[in-house]
Length: 105
Image 1 (cartoon, helix red, strand yellow):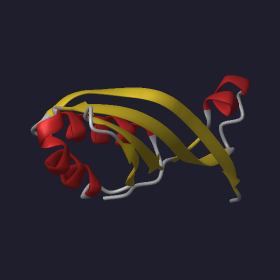
Image 2 (spheres, one colour):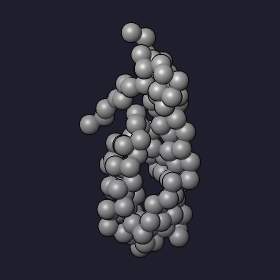
Image 3 (tube, helix red, strand yellow):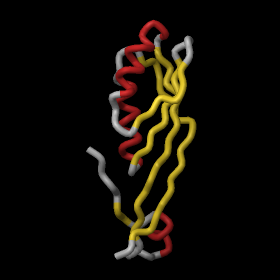
């Protein structure tokens, strides 16, 4: 289930502007290392996850995965789901960017 977080940003909270709310958009890049003999199965399992795209893989069992989510909790959930796939050795976050857009009330 895709959820949105409408809450004051950290910056607004620290400045005392609690009435400002923001819609977050997270872009995260992961490197997933899998057992090479199970790469096809790992790839198929990751492709079934929402908000997830595989951009590259190689014969050594490494995949570049990009997540586009509405909050940081979904990032952690996807990483846990990827780590639970049979054949995955490890998942490493290599990039994370947050964009905020102000929501008018």
